[in-house]
Amino acid sequence: MATTTKTVGTKQAKRERTSHATNWGRGFIVKLILMMAIDALGVYGLLATWQTDQMGLFAGLAVLLVAANYIYFARRTLPLKYIYPGLAFLLVFQLFVIGYTFYVAFTNFGDGHNVTKPQAIEALLQQAERQVPGTNAYPVAVVEKGDELGLAVVAQDGSTCAGAVAGDVCLGTAEDPLSVVDGATVANGRPTDVPGWQVLNLQQIISRQDDVADLRVPVSDDPEDGSIRTPDGTNAFEFKSTLEFDEATDTMVDTATGTVFHPNDRGQFEAEDGTRLPVGWRVSVGWENFSTAFTDARYAGPFWRVLAWTVSFAFLSVATTFLLGLFLATVFNEPRLKGRKIYRTLMIFPYAIPGFLAALIWSGMLNRSFGFINQVLLGGAAIPWLTDPWLARLSVLGVNLWLGFPYMFLICTGALQSLPDDVLEASRVDGASAWRQFRSIKMPLLLVSTAPLLISSFAFNFNNFTLIYMLTRGGPRFADASVPIGHTDILISMVYSVSGLDGTAAKNYGLASALSIVVFIVVGTVSAIAFRQTRKLEEVM
Image (cartoon, rainbow, N blue to C red; front, side, top):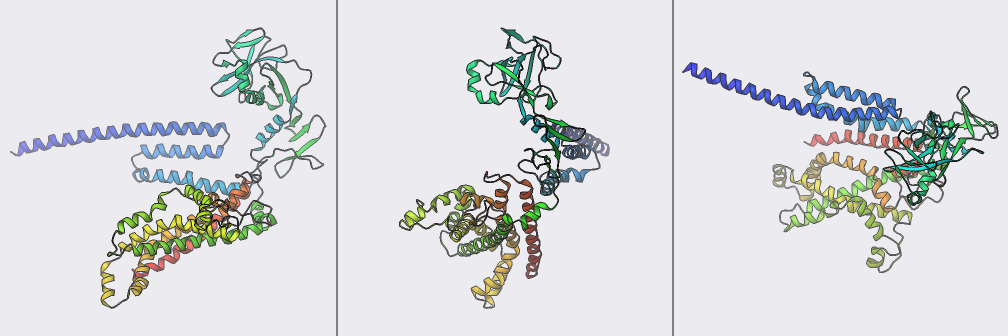
């Protein structure tokens, strides 16, 4: 009997080991496939960053990729297998963004300074290109592959197409310089068939006339060698820049006038008479952007007013939505109230409507001339809800109250229902009134669970860009400000306006990043102080 039991146990152990090995093998295969997919995406990202000369991103991505392979194939890194995804996302989507914002804040990144110095030099040489006088026209065919356009030209004696002899067909695009194409056919001195490309006919060229006229095909990788362009899709002409870059002296020379431009500390080529070439590059400007935000008359005055309104808006939004939500939660938490489930459902309807859509609807309803509120509810009144500074602010707070109270209603309802019944019953036995219960028991216990949410709501409203932009676009504008900032702008919408993304001003990402850092510091400081103060509420527990 003992021998039989031992045999059965041995067989069962073998089956368990076999099952474990099978499951481990399947798990390893799944892990291997997932890591292969991650590595493929990682290699693609490495190639992309290498080609764009983003060495910092290349190094960071390489470290993340190597770490992922080590962690998920090593046997002693079990905790990291669970922690690593969160750490990677934290690094990529939080720390990198914050770090890059800090970097931009100390540069002149903006219109005219969007690129690096080599890219700026190339752009200047391209912008200064003029048709070379006296050169012959190249017979050309406009070719297409997908959405990409190119030019196929027949090389002539002395052709600028590298390695070509007279009669060869050379092909180039906006990204790739001219190069000889094998297998192309020519008829009547013009390319008629190019392998892998479709030769456009006259009607197709006319349909893409603007794209064809704007097409610039570089002659070589050196921008100083110029390009070819075609005004009509039948003949191409050679263009060369009137500027020349002297790498030895780091100067740009205008060959037409002989003017020499030297690089200055603002990231532009500048002549002795102060003339500057239009395209510049990013350079460090130290604390200049922060100084501009607080001392420049264009921004300093509006900045302090916007900051005061932002703090007021965030505080009043939290206070009003919380008080209304708490009041409704208290009313609908009364057991004797019939149909309270239906009422609770109705209360959260505004929460189900997307915030940007609700703000647009309210913008129409508050319109002075044809809004529903003025025309229907107020009998044709012409109250400037969105154009008067104080009424606009009141409207913003009112609409935010309508949008925000359902959230507070939900969390207050949940908090009230979680209060201990024995404590409330004991207070009633001791003769405590309903107000005394609310003030001494319900409210302190309620704040313990809701205070962190109130702080997060303050931070959200401090950056509530959607409501401001969709409802008032920051208006009405300050009458004494030279920048597009208004009475209902909060700091984040001011950053949007200053950055120039709304099209009302020149783009200035450096200044916008500096202001973003100010927003980050203010919100972080207020939140840290508030969280520390909420610890005192836990003493009631």
